[in-house]
Length: 132
Image (cartoon, rainbow, N blue to C red; front, side, top):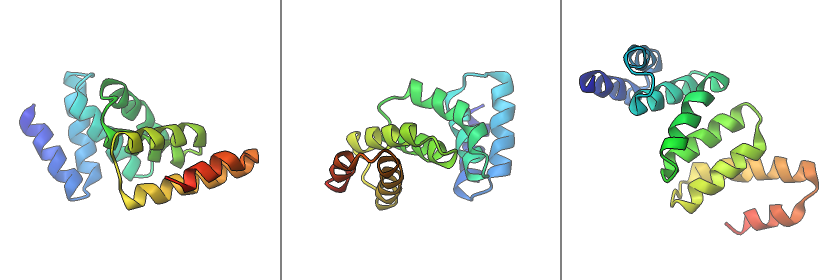
């Protein structure tokens, strides 16, 4: 199984998400709780534009790796893609608190905060985000 996961990771790096997804599915048929396969499945589905289908796998990975900031960021992106802005904001904040300081993530967080807090009229929260 390790060889299959290594191949799937390589496909993810090469942005061959269909191939990575197939391998992750093969591994998950043997072990439906395989953490790396769930991660690859969720990320591949997200990158293929199927965020709604990616969410269960990504949520499972995040629950088992709560201190992994990158997992939180990926989960936040999936929530954002399906317009679950509250959940996206919470995951982005967790990612930041776990030390993920990526410029593109900051832009995504800013965008989510702008939409979320302007809808609510909660400008105090929005101002807090501008300070991050």
